[in-house]
Length: 157
Image: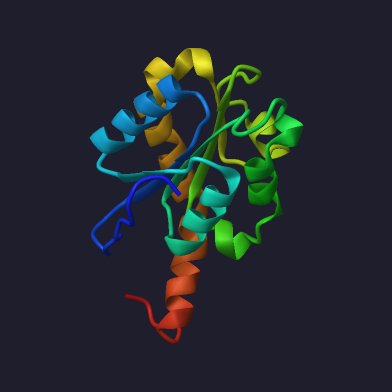
């Protein structure tokens, strides 16, 4: 595990980055910090699984070749794809790499993430993260409203 243990408080907006390319990781970390996220990085697939199990990350960025030579070898992406909805629901997942066209919904669906981003558009990462998070929030709003009503016994606030 890289770095020291870092507490996440209820006021934090936690984000997790799983990149093998240092320049991309630095750029993503700077963007997420600028957006107000408390950023953690995973050095390995095991590190990713441990960190993801310890906090409810709001944003997760994964490089298509994180710890792998091909996307099919990316154990972290495979783990995300195999996660139950309850484990994934709280996070917006973005997959970044050379083989995608940015924000193609079917490509994102194919990889079980909310959005794909071509690495050539890293300079737009701030806007792309904001859009992906916003789109995911809008998409899940009805579910969250109903879930809140169930938790309060059906009363509307």
